[in-house]
Length: 93
Picture 1 (cartoon, one colour):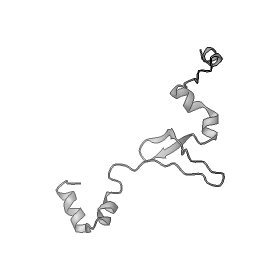
Picture 2: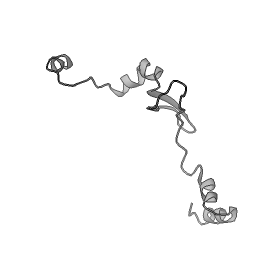
Picture 3: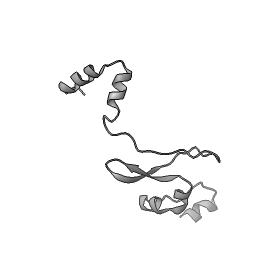
Picture 4: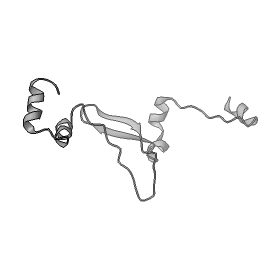
């Protein structure tokens, strides 16, 4: 089908399946698809950084777990350790 459309200058491309994307060595080599370690899920595949420079390779990391940085965030908002403890006690966080 792609060959037919290209004969008429119709823009088109093949669409890869998820399995093809996961197993494409060129996508892995270019950092387009990366494997990311996760704290509870082992590792998983995700999209790499679209920004690519010769001297810079951005690190793609897993997202934080739910509530993982809650105490730091609350402390940065001015909550004391006691305030955070009280919020935990009443199950507000």
